[in-house]
Image 1 (cartoon, helix red, strand yellow):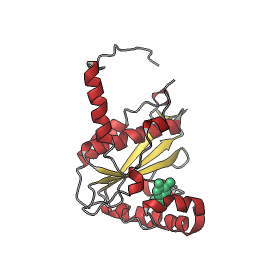
Image 2: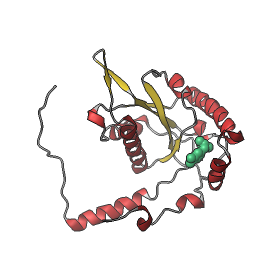
Image 3: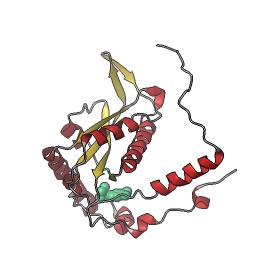
Image 4: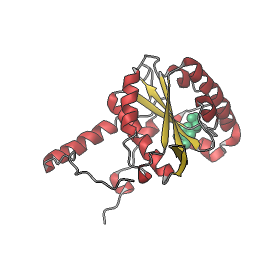
Length: 223
Ligand code: IYR
């Protein structure tokens, strides 16, 4: 294994006032990202999704093993299959598996077992976490898999938003059906999350509840 290092040549230092402006700009931009549940069926070019997945793949991760795999789904047949399987799971969830407290917590969102967006949106991106990877025929253990894939997923959501797309995170439980639908190895990989990406439909809404973000003093201490 090479232990060669390269000089850091692509770090950019900004004047402090510009840093503050950039931080403010980024905050204003990212706070406009809302999970939406009504998507238009308007097409989104694959090239855009490819670029966003490349951005996700730059996420910091354990030992740079990059323990993730993305399956970007545009096929109507596969989307229909995913909707069918996810709705069956959600029906059981909403019919009682969730428990009363969880269902109460979801009331402000107004969600239910019906997931038409799984077919309407142009892209579903299934993210898989890899407990082990195979490299040159050899199995290697991955580290901090959950953390790494979580960060990559965050990068992906930001990239999609930045590119001008609406997004939704979806985690039907259990998600094991996604391994089969996407043809992934279920011994070493687990479905981590499904990201729905596309344009919001004209009647997309954001629940009032979702707009209430905690103030800084509540989420942060400076010591
Ligand atoms: N997976 C379900 C339920 C759900 C759970 C949470 I926590 C949410 O923040 C939103 C939904 C569904 O998609 O309806």
